[in-house]
Image 1: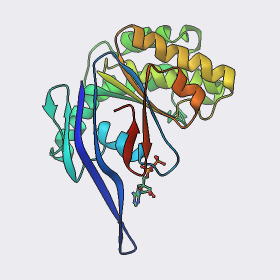
Image 2 (image 1 turned 135 degrees about the vertical axis):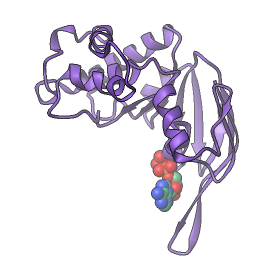
Image 3 (image 1 turned 90 degrees about the vertical axis):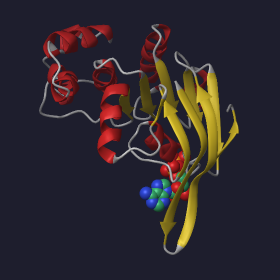
Length: 220
Ligand code: ADP
């Protein structure tokens, strides 16, 4: 599903160069559930941005589902991203004035898909929120908001779900419920990558890729 070879990403800050990714190589097979771990500043977010087709590497190659996406234009990258990747964020990133149903429908409407409402309903049912579809985010608990975000991430049927500290704003019990949802999605065959600095979260994943100073130190 993912083949990364020698990924390099540098940032120029105040005249000096920071190698946020310093030659990162690994493979992730379809159907894996992987945690990307490491201390703050180790390059996790930079890697996620590249894997999520939000940014391109300065060097190295990234093959996603058989297609080399490392040198695509921004527009082409956006098209791949919309089709192949679902995102879940620590802060949920829901539209506050829209209902759960409208939030989940949104990516389908953007993609010009038919039967958006029905598919959004089904996705919300899949995360156990059938009785909260008309609620706005402010009327939902943190765990319920993250369920809406997960429904939104999977409603387009992406090949990969990328989650960035998805339980970071939740208490332990609610976080475990969210991880159980990811495990269920993975059991259905979805490829899931979770960035986290929490050991408890990483333990839910069968494989852990550990980063330090822009390199993979374990799990490649
Ligand atoms: P993590 O997600 O593990 O905390 P990051 O990928 O955010 O790590 O950061 C890796 C390194 O790259 C850090 O030294 C960080 O300061 C630097 N960095 C990340 N993004 C930028 C940016 N947009 N501009 C300059 N430096 C950045």
